[in-house]
Image 1 (cartoon, rainbow, N blue to C red):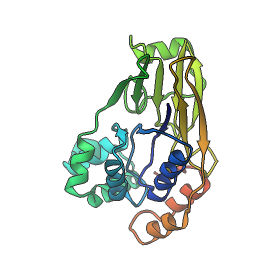
Image 2 (cartoon, rainbow, N blue to C red):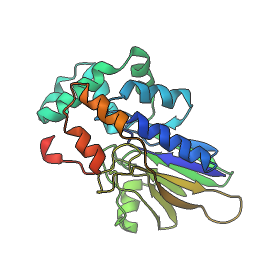
Image 3 (cartoon, rainbow, N blue to C red):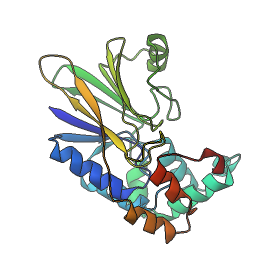
Image 4 (cartoon, rainbow, N blue to C red):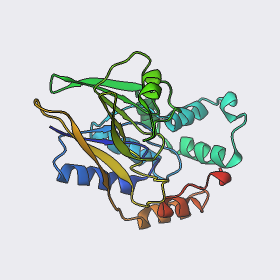
Length: 244
């Protein structure tokens, strides 16, 4: 069984289309999404529709949650948020249809599944601790055990950091999908993870980098009221955090 895991699409429809096409071409039998469907990119509505139409097993990310909070006029969320980020999230919330709002609201915070009758999968956005917690390649056995808080999956899948890796820690296959829409590690090509599961042997995975037609994304940003320099972030694979 070949599975594809992606995360952090952030409203980048052309990249999502390419990721799905690439994963299917490589033989992926099922595709999962570890959250952050929306935020930053100019296609939040279309991304939600495509994830729903493709029946992708998805969970909620921290940006999905923030956009939903703005839809319900959460004043607490606005306090302390940088103006640039607030503008982006507010724009995103106004682009969502009621159908997509309901879809996002219905996404769970995590996903558990038994694969091939023997491997326990746990998919979270940040970590089992919270949406905004992080799992980097440097994670140690002790740190991972604390984040798991007693859970004992065979496979842990996450996103949030936008920095992809696959690593075995304390007998657990840890996968960070990176970002299928907005990489920030200096590599402009987004990423997702492929995982092969069999009834014999251990799971084996690899990170896939892929290119996509960026022109559609750049044009959509330019024709929206999103900050125009977001296009540079998407094209360079670097997030200029000081702006937002």
